[in-house]
Image 1: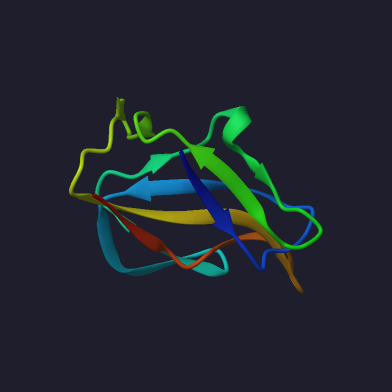
Image 2: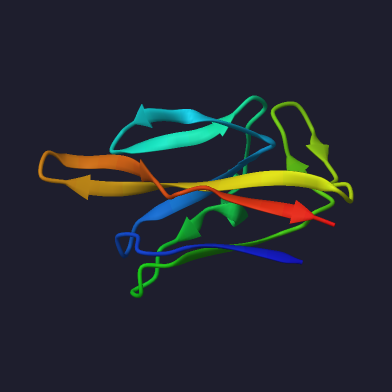
Length: 109
């Protein structure tokens, strides 16, 4: 199993992880930047939505045999590299908004 974790998030908020194999120049969305491109899958089922704890962390254990993609689930193959990024609710002086964590790249060998 692989556990994704995001840190330094606003406590009590929720978020989801995105996944893809393509990285793009940062695209501004909300208060942050999306770095995933191409076919982006989202861990958006109710059981996959993470709640940020009091320490500012959100976590999700993923099944490498069931990686979400826009039209289907795929299995990670040895030698592939996948990128993950969390999208979470945030609050600024203007009110509720959203933000992104930095992305992480994992080589599956």
